[in-house]
Length: 184
Image (cartoon, rainbow, N blue to C red; front, side):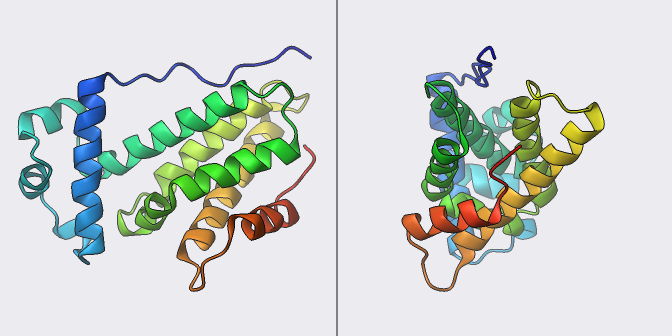
């Protein structure tokens, strides 16, 4: 079977990367301070991030886009890591997914707070669908499976992130391999 590259070369120039980093840091601070997401206004966020509102509106329609862009970046990094693997299988794929979860624990914690559950789940499902493109399933089955996987992976990541007692990465990997399907 031919190798399918997942990374669609999602690129953000250096200035936009710096802007996104400032915005997510300011938003993360609001979250850590206990500010309700719907109480944050763009003017305040931009002032906290030291980013002009014109720059914000050039790249975003609303504050939730700041969270979404971070997930786009995380998914792009995940796809790049998958693409460099000689052979993708459940074992090395699950390691890559758990690594991605642990690299973005706070971001996963912010999903519910920012009311982004549906959009992030759709993003994860779309990524799963890219992987399933090469599989010999009907169109309906591909969509069903990708939707299931996107939902399951997001729920798993949020449970790991929100666990009252921290879960080690090794334990998370063991649980991931136990709870998610190993054959598709």
